[in-house]
Image (tube, rainbow, N blue to C red; front, side, top):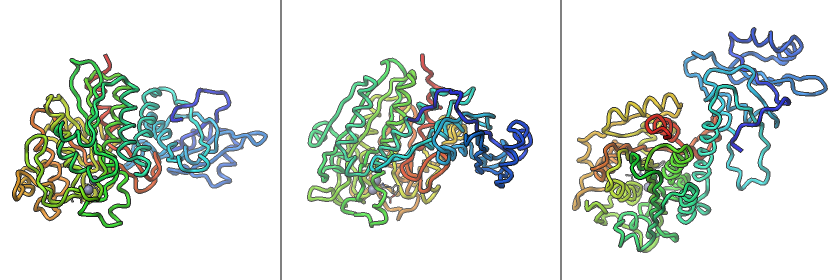
Amino acid sequence: MFSFAPPTPESAPIWFVAADGWEAVKASIGVPAVAFAERCGFKPKPGRLQLVPGEGGALAGVLFGVDAPDAPGRDPFAPGKLATSLPEGVYHVANPPADVGLAALGFLLALYRYDRFKAEPTQKPRLVAPAGVDADRIERIAAAVAFGRDLVNAPANVLGPDALEHAAVKLAGHFDAAVRMVRGEELLGANFPLIHAVGRAAAESPRIVDFVWGRDDAPKVTLIGKGVTFDSGGLDIKPASGMELMKKDMGGAATALTLARLVMETGLDVRLRVITPIVENAISGPAMRPGDVIVSRKGLTVEIGNTDAEGRLILADALALADEDAPELLIDFATLTGAARVALGPDLPPFYTDDDALAAAIAEHAVRARDPLWRMPLWRAYGAMIDGTVSDVSNSGTGAGMAGSITAALFLKRFVEKAKSWVHFDVYAWNPKARAHGPAGGEIQAARALFDLLTERYPKR
Ligand code: BES
Ligand code: ZN
Ligand code: ZN
């Protein structure tokens, strides 16, 4: 499905045409094709698509306008548009555009649709892998991103805690990872009081899924993802507008699982651990209340300033667990704050770390993979905003919403001590609008950049 087509003599050529490349393409497609394209008003402008007829009603090829390689703001995924506009059939690249690997990835990513509940899945064109790209790697990335997008797009009645647990366990099983699960009341005995407190009001029990993969003495890399299958806000209930998209509040878990799938499929040389705290933030008699104080796994006492700041609560217990075996690299992903969107918008997730070298490497891979990420500061002085009134720390604090993404990150930091490096991603996990490389809806952010970084650091042995 998210794979390239096998080469075939029947495939139709796609010519990528930048303004200054039109004359060269003209020379290779022949006089009648040029005459037809110009008759149709084709201009070599970015995004312009022109089918060129062959003999007997056949398709001789396709012209697709692209930016010059050095154009500012050029979108290397722009050829993804072909996946949604070409007629069904097989195509090949006649003249590779700049960043042909990203162009091919853009095409595969753009094939994605959440069509599980649609009567008729749409017919799609297929592309032969262009020469010189790492076709296997591109296919693996496209399939993993589709897996993650499916999790985010699944409505909360379809993907509640049971189903999200099932997805994580199935992934772990596929790669023979060792899985541990703790559910419901057992969370108290196993010392996950915050996960229990957030999830205990829901019909499906709160839980934690923890799996380990890879050789024991490889470097320890641990991923954590916020798995809130629906965030009503709890007793501090969200308004309708704020609740509308909250099926995606497990986007962090989807991101962690997507990255884990890539790491395991590729066989990177790490001892990978993936921890997914899973809850629904619901309302019923046992719901946690504003003002409640809970002793966390780590022993820090946490005051519930706002029941809608539930993500940092479940992450706190998960981070404390992860920190106990002092991983070399601890990464968490979470749709944690509205404030991150206010600061940077939907397409540029902030990340937080005290490790400057790691931050530089992440920023560099984000640019190279075209998976945008932006470092924000763990501004220590703002720590005072989350002091508890009767406890060690509050989950909302006194900042009146100021620096909300930073204070959330500072809250998480309180639960990490032994990990050599820790980085937190406040992702949105959603495309408000369709883009060249994917439809509106669930999106996986940061996983591609991190996969590149991990591949470079821990190559397959
Ligand atoms: N899941 C939300 C954050 C969110 C909202 C992410 C919208 C993406 C889009 C989170 O649990 C939340 O509600 N956070 C509150 C925290 C506040 C109560 C301290 C927020 O950001 O408003
Ligand atoms: Zn919330
Ligand atoms: Zn939430």
